Amino acid sequence: MKRDSLPGCWRDFADALGAGIDRIVLYGPSGTGKTYAALREGVASAGAHRLVCTEDMTAADVTGCWMPTAGGQFEWLDGAAVRAWRGDGVLGGRLVVDEADRAAGDVLALLLAVCDTDGSARFDHPATGAAITPLPGFSVVMTTNLEHPEELPSALRDRFPVAIEIDAPHPDAIELLPEDLRDAAMATAVAPSSRRASLRAFYAYARLRESLEPERAARLAFGADRGREIADALAIDAAELGA
Ligand SMILES: Nc1ncnc2c1ncn2[C@@H]1O[C@H](COP(=O)(O)OP(=O)(O)OP(=O)(O)O)[C@@H](O)[C@H]1O
Ligand SMILES: [Mg+2]
Image 1 (spheres, helix red, strand yellow):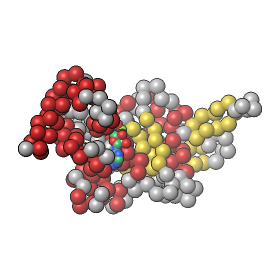
Image 2 (tube, helix red, strand yellow; image 1 turned 90 degrees about the horizontal axis):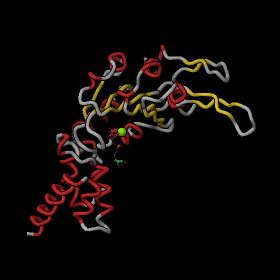
Image 3 (tube, helix red, strand yellow; image 1 turned 45 degrees about the vertical axis):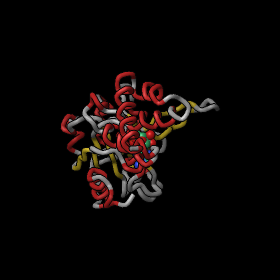
Image 4 (cartoon, protein in one colour; image 1 turned 90 degrees about the vertical axis):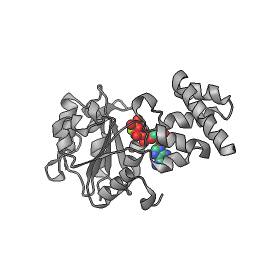
């Protein structure tokens, strides 16, 4: 998709990365393409590494842990942050911190260190003893469904100078849908929460209606109440198109 035809929020993301901003928060409703874009946009050969924050995550997810091997030994497995710091060995990669608002306690403290400006971040590797620091080019994109990025822990928010509200689904994601569903998906993906339906539900609906009655497909994909409303709206659109 050409930059000029992108919705403003997606253009902002591309332009902020292009300008060299390497700590960015993407926030907004679920299923609009935040994680997809964070894993790909501006990511070169050094690759992207995803860290999904949960209440149960530990330092193992972030920096790594010792794992038993089949031979009865232990070997160190790098966590997502260390893998992203190392990148391809020449350039640092992308760390995608998904659902960043769920990080808490010790893991949050570790994340703060990992996301710090590159000059002050450092990890002493338990297996080799080497001091690991982020290679040049290392970047972090955090995603969250919070409506206001200020609700993130302030020390974490402070490390990310640019926060972009994703208020439109990515057009490339919309294009994967059959043509008659695109307008409805575009509008309902970012509607107020009582009327919202995510892109994922539209993908499921498109698949289900290939073999099921449209009303039943809508009920399964969107739930009983929303399903009826969306099936009715799509039927009206189809009737108008046919008229
Ligand atoms: N640019 C794109 N091209 C193709 N498919 C896409 C694109 N963006 C998103 N998708 C698809 O749309 C769905 C939702 O995308 P994604 O998981 O990135 O949303 P999200 O905004 O991170 O949602 P959440 O807030 O729930 O984590 C996925 O199935 C993904 O593969
Ligand atoms: Mg996501």
